Length: 258
Ligand SMILES: [Fe+2]
Image (cartoon, rainbow, N blue to C red):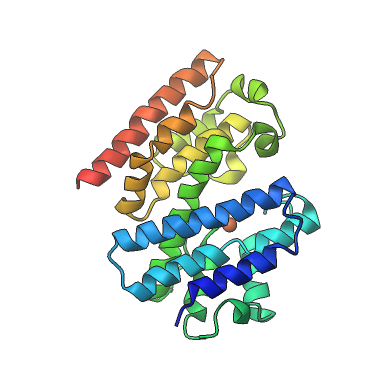
């Protein structure tokens, strides 16, 4: 049985051990609740069983559990330079046994573990069982979707260590632009400018698993809101971003009318 109320109660207790006043921690707590709610929206949209809807929310609650220790140890969320927060989350939940505090029933462990492990990877690994794959896909969509909300509000200094003014003057590099034109997500290590990163957040749309998740983006006007957040000072960037708006919104519409 999945007691989401109990799990959420322990989550609150767990995160209270970290400095909640710290902006970095606070953003991750709010992100977690955002992901729980979007996971529910997706699971309900997919008309899953009551148990799978609860399981999707539980995975949402746990998916970034490794972020809190990461913030304390490194004061940085860049996995590439610090540690893989998904692998770390799996370690504290399943090797150190923290999962016990969230849920007594052990039958969902493999599904939860594989969903968390795969949530931040470029692709989902091969060989997952059907229900593991389903939940890995839900958490990946939910995580990206809440990130669309975060990118609308997070301040640029904490996002890029540059001001909004500085970022707005930047260009998209050719390599990254080519990748975008291939209707693909952008490989993190290829990004050079902050504007490359900004574009890469929007290109996440190409990695969405479920149409219902894209429906959420459309209903909440997420693509326009992220693109309109910056006043692009370079003509080249401005034109590219207008093109991005057009093709991404068309991609979403095309998937939704299928
Ligand atoms: Fe994460």
